[in-house]
Image 1 (cartoon, rainbow, N blue to C red):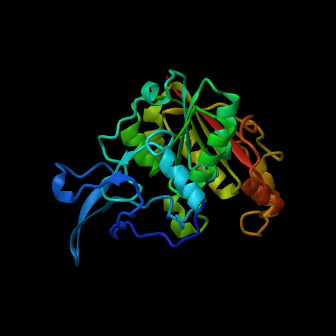
Image 2: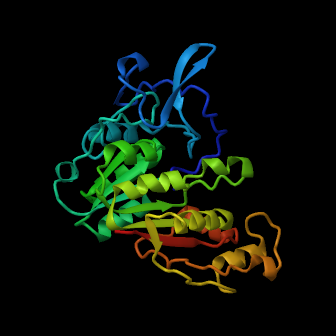
Length: 319
């Protein structure tokens, strides 16, 4: 589940123009000339084909095949505009126009807390949370339409009514769809680790992204993270620990020899290069207990079979 999705495709350079809208993408597009200003997160560049509007930095995903079975396609169309939230686009298939504001009470029909699950993959964490907390409103954010369609199928079959879904780039959802302080929790479980050093800039958990998360979280709201890659876990912790808007809910927990980071480094789980204890020792800790509603997915089971450790982190937005 990746938030925003595990993808192995070759990433697009931020200077390349975005792809054209897919015919079956239910969205309204605007040509650059129609806009008074370039939306946040985009920039205008000159190319051999003329002026193009592109994202102003690398994204944390590339889209996979969007093909779905005829049954899932009909299900998608039947629930477009209700469970599947309509999105006004700007320049990309996963973009969100600045005027796309979401009225939580109106859309869900109840005034419960909003929980935003980013990069849901096939939606296991969203579904489990929604079933256990019917009083809460769940927003599943994902760029991989077949994954959302699988979650939709399950939600409809089981009669779960407190889930809504949006097929869009997560930073733009946070910037444009959600009001400041609208969310009680934000979940980001197993976002793409972008293991190669030259792609680390594509990792979702960066200081700029946490600025966006902090804006939509209510005071005292919770950010929950999980990954199975020790290098990414260490980066997540460093970025969140040093962010002025967040406080680790479990400072120092599992520091030392029992730290999953220590064990992962000792066994070389990321790169098959074990480190001596003097280099591997994690003296910081701060790892959270496993979040109670997060299910063990097939993806996580595969990671565990490969010998990788699971890292959970939890942060509270400082009032």
